[in-house]
Image (cartoon, rainbow, N blue to C red; front, top):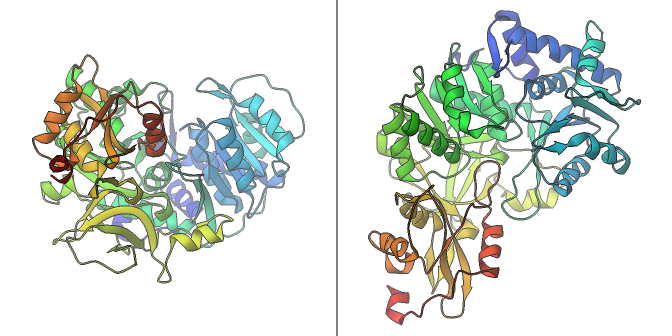
Length: 541
């Protein structure tokens, strides 16, 4: 049943049942305070499932998980699978309107929530939600506070105690049954609920694990967001499929990345580019990589070529890059450890098993290799659709079942996929199309630059001017002319930033992706200065 053996459990409940029966003492979840084995997680999931079933939660009901990356999140996932319910993983740091939207739109009947985390009093929030949201019937709280009690609010430990040894109906799930509704991070527009099946999630989990050779004895570090599709699928489910252990961190201390990897004997490090930037700074300041580390895997946001090179040079292990979409249950393409370095580091590899990728023109015409167009994808990981939004689902897919990703890319002559940027992010400067990532990669290579994002801002001469939003490294000194001169060394004249805005931080999603619309609105409202006058020759360079 291991991914490397070519056989994958068909439902999520079957993963844990297999591991708990075959090697119950093997470590599964590692935290700073404890190590939980597969058998212990299985016992807790059984008890929680019994308590939830006794509350009337059953097949088709939605259970919202408003939790950091704690073991209770994992236990809740497997308990929901056991009673045929769906999970709705929600970012616990969402603003109140976004949290309310996810709970209301999903029709969550039950929530499992932290009592307090990140300085947020969830007890007060849910006290109001239980009144405002008629579908929300029960709340299970995780924490140490002495709570008030009524017939709808239960503490975690009480639920586990009440469910031990208790019988309940455990309906047999089918692989194509829906299991999760994940809300997109919303870089633009209102979040949409992506409905994924057992089969969707397990396919992405198994293919990712197989590509990197994940196996019993491996310890995966760097997962700090189980509510995100990569944390749920390749993270939580992929390690269970492989018999590997997963290090859980709630990101209270982002500076502890290196210490956590060392402490737990990490062999594989997952992360988004910002996580690896933090890790590299710690390695360079303290010296010494985690001694057992054999591989790094980056996903969730584009990575600059310079950062990819630094990771391999500083950590001394291969880096692979995954292209992950919520709508595809996470990984749809990735590089492999044995790929040539230029393909492993500077592409998102080849499609995972069973997944088809096409690059298309706006009218749907499939483009030949080496042509830039919109990436479309079809395969076993592709979502059932956007929950309760059939029109949105139809607009995102074509009659052949391909998802229009909105990402621009190309497939090279060797079959490797390159992601250029978002279709709507293209800046139209004086009639020339500029892809922000190309400019960002050049700026990010400057030693004084920590992060950079490029957006278009209105300009009466050019239509759109290029604005580079730059976060300096701590103590770094760099000016606008220096950024422009640095860019001019390798970029065409029309790609050089017209404006440079120095900022303390960029607005990011939880995966480290820049919220470009928010950033563009901010820069347009408060431009650093008016773009300098340009000659027609400069515009047409």
